[in-house]
Image (cartoon, rainbow, N blue to C red; front, side):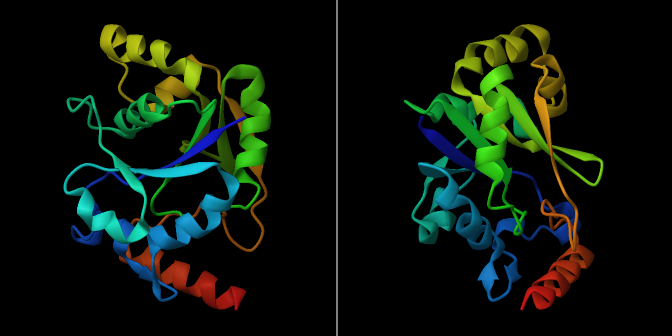
Length: 197
């Protein structure tokens, strides 16, 4: 079974003053490099979904896959793009570019549940993380139909449409799906890093 990992690096970072969240510094590294470090070992290949100049990701050494449906301004466009790109992979696993503490059993647990329903997403602390998910690539035609004929707009609605399995992770010292949206979040992430050292 081949699994493609996809880091969804869209979003305007308005709460960060326009600074792209993937390149915020945490523990001496760009956040996206921390995501790659925890995610790369779990999948057979890894790409970044992002629009704009792809050369800004050159140092990662990863292919950059832009959105195909440019009228769609949500992460659903990114999911569609990476499913189209997936080639011979049976599953695509998506994660946001601003989640530096991803669990190391993410792929195994999501794919195990996605085998039965075709899709699975993560949950922690009672909150569903719609972009942290495993998706069978065979869902692509259904997704394209939903976008074009039903005006499907949000990943949340797609999750409901395919009855995605929900896989829960335990919230211990911190949320494994903690994402950095604001300067306050970045400071909190720095506290988590200090607590790990």
